View 1 (tube, chains in turn blue, yellow):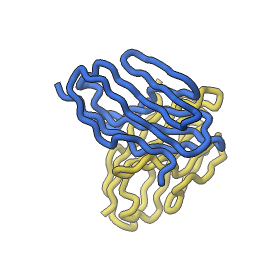
View 2 (cartoon, helix red, strand yellow):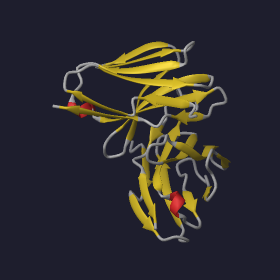
View 3 (tube, chains in turn blue, red):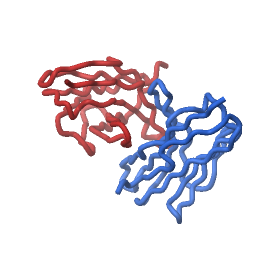
View 4 (cartoon, rainbow over the protein chains, first blue to last red):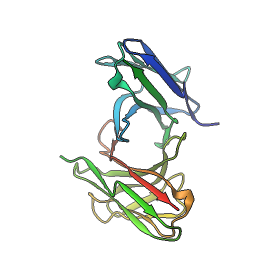
Length: 108
Length: 113
């Protein structure tokens, strides 16, 4: 079993829909990251959080440390949000562990 | 700043050939990493370095070697390419004083046939 599990694996939405991607992890962590991988392959960091909630534009990330769960929400989704979203955790021994990613397609 | 750059973008190797994947960062970051990304799998750490002259193995180091002679450069060497090394390789860096955010290169798609 992977230490970082994401769901769903694939997600198709219509433009304007509210989207939620989930991440569960089984190790103690010092931080959790949400990354975005563009269709061309480049990876960019969206959020790093260790508690609570962060918001950047239409993106919101939350984390529940007790439940070992994080969610990434996208409001008013747009076709340019189409990408693979990756959850990654920094474990207590400083190793990074990555989820397999959620492939999001937003149709116009 | 150019950030993290990788070359080449694509490469096809025959079994048993060798090659070096180049990675350079111009942000004066101490930490550098090499990952591989296989279809349907999360990124796996191959090797990492916490500074010039210091390298250490990650989860999947077999078949690879690295060196870190300067802060900027962190090349990854494949000595005897095998089909199992077909993957997309990402280099990343971060400053140990920062909030753990890693900056990724654009990736190198390698096929071994």
